[in-house]
Length: 514
Ligand code: KIV
Ligand code: ZN
Image 1 (cartoon, rainbow, N blue to C red):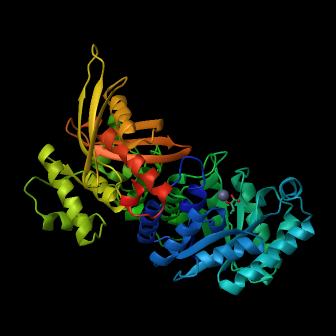
Image 2: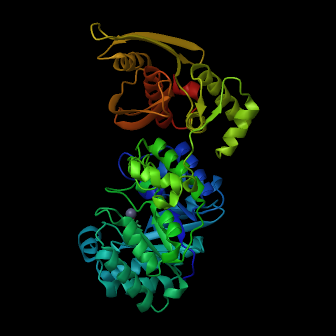
Image 3: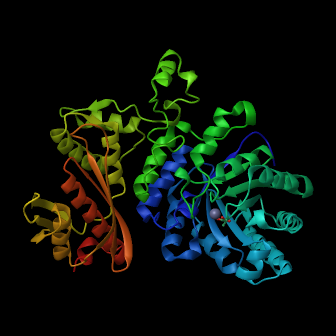
């Protein structure tokens, strides 16, 4: 199948999330999936259902709740995996089972310990089984770029005959070079006799920094689905970056003559959301979504841009939805104005969530003269992805300085009960964390701590992201405040609450604390 449309298959929630340090809880996955639907991706790969009960639940919940895109679940080429994927996808409006097996000599011999004939048979059987549960079945030949081209073509032909609707050619280890990869796609397009019955897809890893270039070379050669992730997150050096692929196809329409269904104005918001839920900040010079992507420092550039933006700008910040950081609301703004502003930022909140956001907005606007879009986005996302709060912050009081022993007193609420404790530490943040550990009885090991100012100026909201290990389980916590010690405490408490939620599953909060 060819045509001028390139389908965007987003695997942020599967290949992106499976990389160490990028894990998300179920609420975060749902929030990301809903945003991906708003962005207009064609396929959301929501997870690998057999990998764990958590992965299964995430795929099932995305399948139930997210409408619009096709929801895909990954399965190795064996009956248990395929059936588990089918079960997770049962309630999807549109579903796809994505099954894979490696076809390279090195993977077949050392990983699978299978001969090529058995691999071919397993691929065909998995596709046939998947077809019983879904019309739309994708097959991936893992490590395709290091596979023998004759064998690869044989497998592709056989799985199309078995009913595969999409054939994915992954560069699993990021080994390909653009010309060579484009040629491999051309060979498949020209040599496989039934290739017109399926869409050819590519899935490139970025080990040599060539994932986007390879994907685009494949598109030029006839591939019409690209698998990619937001911000390029993923295993090792990551996957091809969704925003770079989409904007290359759009900006260089003169070269490709192709289009995607992506609403590009949603790109920046999606990137920020993924960055926040994974705690992986986007590098400032990252193409399309980095902080400096549209900043012109050099005087000669600024002069040019002022005379005519096209001198140095090949696309506008507005086209990818970079907010203009204008003053939006203040202390006297009401609930109606807040709702309007949030709606225009793409949030459609129910009444209860809006009330919580409004309360936080009022507290913030008391502390800060100017409330920016970025501040509102942080507050709204915090509420949308909130987990049940086993512990809530009542107050903190710290003393610190370069000649005294930093101490903190923390008061936490657990239901109607109030607990207080004090501790010392290397600084006010550590002292507060020690006091929290004493209260909660779940000591955490701080693995990483990051702080950033959400907007500019001395009154800016500080956002803290922490990675904390509790009893061998690593969780990410986030917190924001105009006071950085409070933001740090809120981030740590968020991690504590997420850990308790994860440990206790869906039990009511009251039971969790007993
Ligand atoms: O990189 C890879 O080969 C994969 C497949 C499962 C598509 O992620
Ligand atoms: Zn991959």
